[in-house]
Image 1: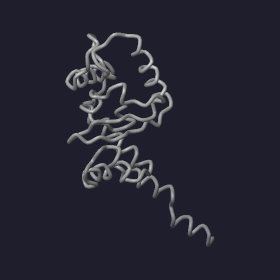
Image 2: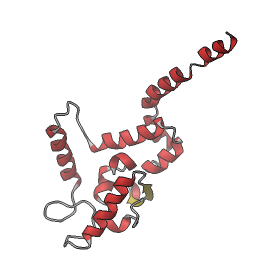
Image 3: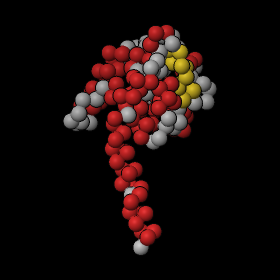
Length: 162
């Protein structure tokens, strides 16, 4: 969910099943400053998984309506999610530090590199200012260089004259 939507770790741990549409496509997020926004799930497998979790939740006893639960079936805290992520990264022998914010950053960068308008990315991330979203655009220089190399406008122009 974090890579697909760019939600903050605190927003993720606060998602309730009732905030997820029945088709798994839309999640209502309660963001910073008590602002609400909708995020959308583009991946069909993730949508199906969210539908399955909602269906399963009707058949188990748990504390509240939260999507992410701990072993006691209570809401998973931000700290517990961070700890689980760190343990998972260590078990995969990753050399880099994996944090929830890195997933948020990756989501924004992937979208910008795929050509999604920065205003859409701003809305998805829940940024009040476009300037906050612009910090993700410098990473897309790699994509810009790749696009320019592929375009090779001078080479194409010269080949027309030869």
